[in-house]
Amino acid sequence: MIEPVAGGMAKVGFTPNACSVIALLAAVAGGAAFYYEAAMAGVIFVLLNAFFDGVDGAIARVTGSAGMKGDFLDHVIDRYADIFIITGIFAGPLASPFIGVFALTGVLMSSYLGTQSQAVGVGRVYGGILGRADRLLLLIIFGIIAAFIPGAVYAGITVMDVMLIIFGVLGHITALQRFHGTWKQL
Image (cartoon, rainbow, N blue to C red; front, side, top):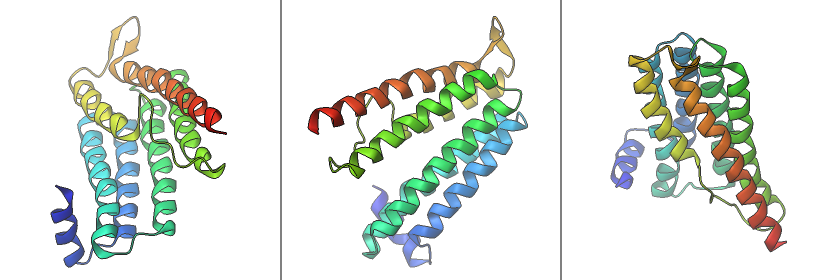
């Protein structure tokens, strides 16, 4: 479904690396929007991040330019995007910094273990209960809810705190799943 869009974007001059950089800029803007409690703007930037992150690889495939450099750049930018968006949420008034750090470590460790599996020769691991696409979908859903319910919903816990708790718990479970799967193959 994305191939025709990627083909059209390639025809008008979009390159895979340019799309990766645009995805990063959207993530920075999204993190800033969440920081300033503009949740709906944050959601729009997360949608832009998801779109450009999804189309960069498709453009590389349709143009025959897919390679290790682009894959490496994409993974680095994805991690920075995660950091900017999640930090923007918990550095501002939408969520607790303590819950935010828990979420960020879960997200980063699950991603790290996916690529570390590849580094030790097992191959890239994408499996587990919470991947990047799942996180982006949750960001969109919870961001929309937070736009309408910005304050605490129960005992000082905000909507975005709930989302970050999900990120933390499921991120760490995903990291353990990836660790276990890799360990069994070594």
